[in-house]
Image (cartoon, rainbow, N blue to C red; front, top):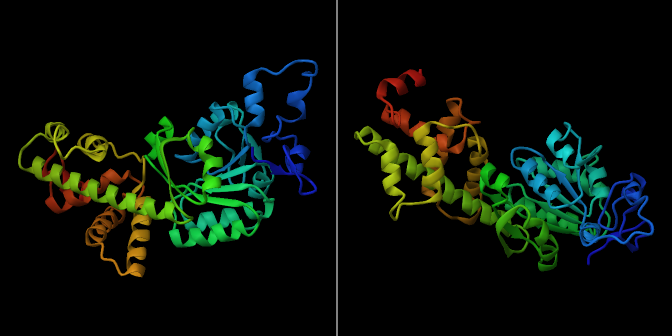
Length: 356
């Protein structure tokens, strides 16, 4: 069992900061929660919950909110920051606790999870004023589940390690659907012992969980994932634009392709979005642009050519320039439709009108 750090730096089940705030941590459920239990023998579930580590969760957006919800459903005590806005009400109803500022989250929790948009936001949450780093004590674990720069991740990990804490980079794939279904793929970089400590937490949020290598490698794997996803979305979009303009029913084309070698999760989910024109974001174009920028910057540093990644990024850029930055990344098809002057399932006049 891994312990937190008490007032004098000795291992204890309840941190001084959490005790002062009467917030629950791994070693207990807070003074109020234990009142009136003297003389009673706790049941198995109560004993299990009392040994669970307290989780700090920063970044309760489209992805983070359902992920934190799964941890609450599993019995974890979860603490969030009201740094910019109040946490979602539905999480509060499940027992989410809120404190003021990121440092307070770090003080009260054993494991601190970040799920924010990009590298600058991670840097600010960790090392900015009242940041996580200022609230850490030896023995805690920081997990960044955002998708950010592998190079900067190594720098962040070193700084956290120097404070006597462990660090995992654990970006995810699966989008909003996977976050809500607790079926995310989690790609982890870090030390074995930190990974094993975090495994029970990961298992409440995802299904395919892999320790890929040391710090930074989780983020590198996520960049590779985003290359595959982007290029597959582009291929599906090309196929549906081609087939539709040739006179075929794109829904039936997609159905036929799902039975052959071309079948994929992208064709299944995003192909359907293209046919039904449902581009409300699960994963926004602007975020995929960010990920492909990481790929192209890394490729330049490595002396690697990524010609199709570059082309796909240009198509995303076209979508963003035409007001689609916040649409789902399956809306990449719109860039190809503009060039073809034809909308999947539609006609040339409709595309010309929308372009105007």
